[in-house]
Amino acid sequence: MDPDYSDDLSPPDESMDDLLNAFEHGLTGEHMHTRWMRLALEEARMAAAEDEVPVGAIVVAAGRVIASAHNQREQLADPTAHAEMIALTQAAAALGSWRLEGCTLYVTLEPCPMCAGAILQARVPVVVWGAADPKAGAVESLYRLFEDPRLNHRVDHTGRVLADECGQILSTFFRGKRK
Ligand SMILES: [Zn+2]
Image 1 (cartoon, helix red, strand yellow):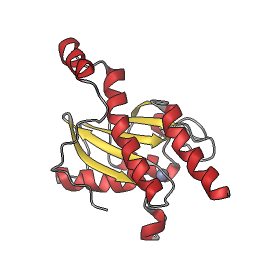
Image 2: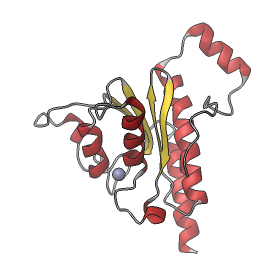
Image 3: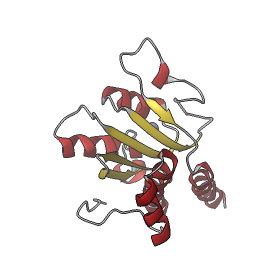
């Protein structure tokens, strides 16, 4: 499913008071991260609706969404079709460059080694992730690829943003599968 970038991508479910407050007082990092993560969660919900493991990712540059994707491993029969991989490809196409300078990637699940590797290759400066992945996480859980001094790039990262919601959608999905 191709996301329509002409859509108004302002985050849903936000009251006018919140918005006014944000504009008047400046968006704090935390508030901003929560807003964008909600869009990544929307993508995760689309994945669930398509019977894909619900993980969503977006890429933001200069306050605008330039990529929005969800896991499509089953539909594309492609082991690399994780949400982050698709979002990175979209973002590179949008910028006309493999080097994603000034971009922030939001993803609902801690990136796996493949995606963390691709994020490093793309020189993404900042990653914000939702739920920790004790079985495959390569940011904190199993590896710390974004902080490895042997690699030629570091990634600033913030984890556990809306972790409960991001994890809930996954556990609901897998519970449904076991029935
Ligand atoms: Zn991955």
